[in-house]
Image (cartoon, rainbow, N blue to C red; front, side, top):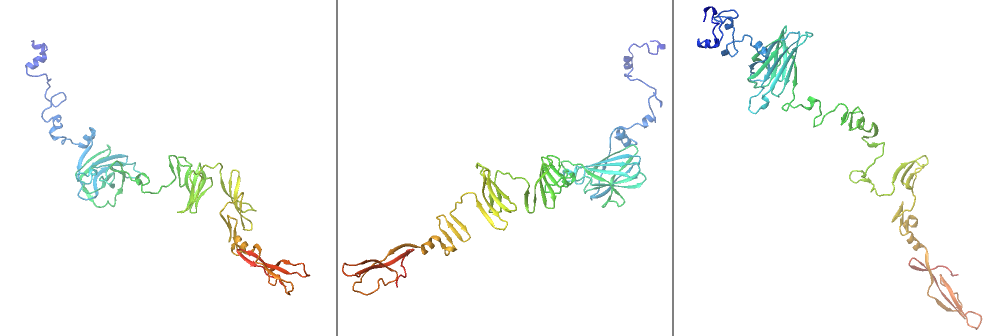
Length: 456
């Protein structure tokens, strides 16, 4: 090897370094300038992070966390009381800035109390300075999360942040971050107050509903299953075209609508077909039913059809000036009967055909199906009995008497009701010889009577 080659003529330089126990590393001069090996109190040594410090020697840990995309985290614990705690002081410039604080854990510590594994998130926003202040919102995910948020403007753009949380909120984890123009100072042991600070401004709390925090009917503007008040029209399966206080079903103009105090209107295709009020059901259209119509509570009046008639029957109410009220029963071939109120107030019942009955009654009179009649004209008795008691049913001559009149003076017959039935005479002399006479009798009912009179 030649000196003037400065080892350039070594064929295998890597092998030569190993032979000199230099390994394969490059060598540099020791110094404090770029391109030298640092030594002594060189800032490249004194400013380096020591792994044994676990990041404790980082000057601005918050900025370091934000630089590497991490979130600043710390511990925070509350005392054994529910109430208000000042958890942070923030600087929020009014040229719009944002800060967030997230708490893991909640009030409570018993095993099995799952809701204590809570999450609470605070989002703080400053506006444009008109008006001056911040917007503070709390987002809850569990019943044991923080309940409320409030803030106090202590000076300029500086604000103390308070939350309300329940009892036993020990050893929570707090993460926070903020925009480059803001700052957050979190307190690991916050100041406590049993009441909200009097000079504070309340923020807004929102609940993030989940299987643990189910919304109530009030939260979502729904009706409870136990009942409630619905304001506005309701449509089932469709929109509502009836408006007002109404319910439509399937068709947007068919349903029920309140048409006034105590009046429930019934609508079909936007036409009012009837209504219900405290006097009953009123319909302006036909009622068609395959069953019966029954009126009454207990013993009922029914209007039914067996659907096996050859014609349709109609029970109709009508009238005019000459026949004010007519209740008429018809079928397809004409009328059967009617009951009519006349202009003078009297009533006529007329049948277009025969009337078949076992007994007919007209006032006190009774007409039996055997033709007999009972009435006051017959002495409040039956006609058959009255005739039997008042008309002669038969006439006869009673037992006769024979009288010899020849050579006798007298008058025969000399008893009222007797009549001469025959006389006799022989061929001697001029006078009759005798008379036969008998009583004339009549039968009334079952009794025979001798007629009266006839004597001189």
